[in-house]
Image 1: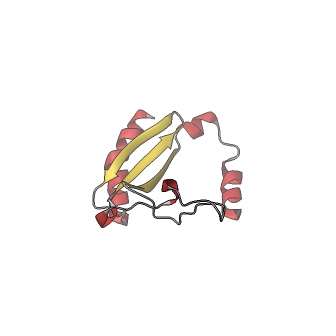
Image 2: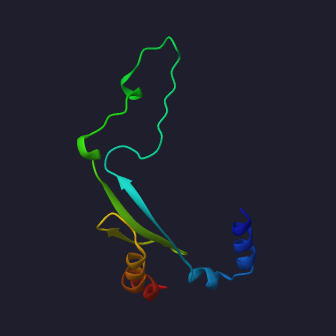
Length: 107
């Protein structure tokens, strides 16, 4: 929380033009089937187990897709697929060197 507050204080006097040049980015994994997280359900002790209480699975986990994307002052920006499913430093550098030039040329 302290780092976020410090970042906000550094940027509190930015102008609209400063923010127009800012690009926020992140990567995420999207599962084709299910979730990686803990799942909970709630039912009363006397209730029957219902279909929506079950955690359905598929053999092999169903797969996932890694994506990298960004947002700019003007809204959603560029997005790309990360093919091997992991985001290594080299992948991030490649995206910044090649794909992000599309964004910077439009800002």
